[in-house]
Image 1 (cartoon, rainbow, N blue to C red):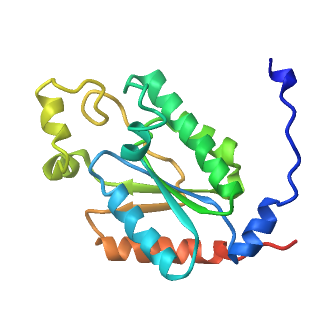
Image 2 (spheres, one colour):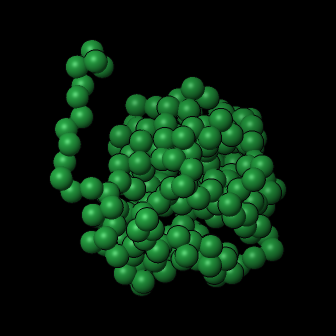
Length: 200
């Protein structure tokens, strides 16, 4: 049936939307273990962008898993599908001219590579929130590690499921060495130049 899908050509383009917003659009993808600080840091980055008048939206595990991906489990194949759907949503948001922030464990390297191919390299910024499993477990903000240790949660990344750390992230934040403020400063320094619209 795919051969019957014919894209409609709309008059307002991504470039038009970026021009209207006065900034470029791209995806900032935060990856790291549960409890590493992804959502906390993404939240403050979005606040800083908002202060600059940048149009943004944050995709987060909780708002995605309760809605569009509520039919998925945490089994490896469902995790892959979870990330694929998020990447497609993010791609639409980037096309809409928004700076999109996504905070997901996204434990598999191949899935993160797939995000990059969906949104395109030039629109993808990978931020690795590097926090040791020991520190994440010590924080255990949502009580997930305790449940995983008790055998109540299967496929818990870092405990009973693997996490494949990024080999060449655009930004790496070691949260055991930096405060949230320092992390946000580093990220903002990296993304600010990318907000300029490329009019070539």
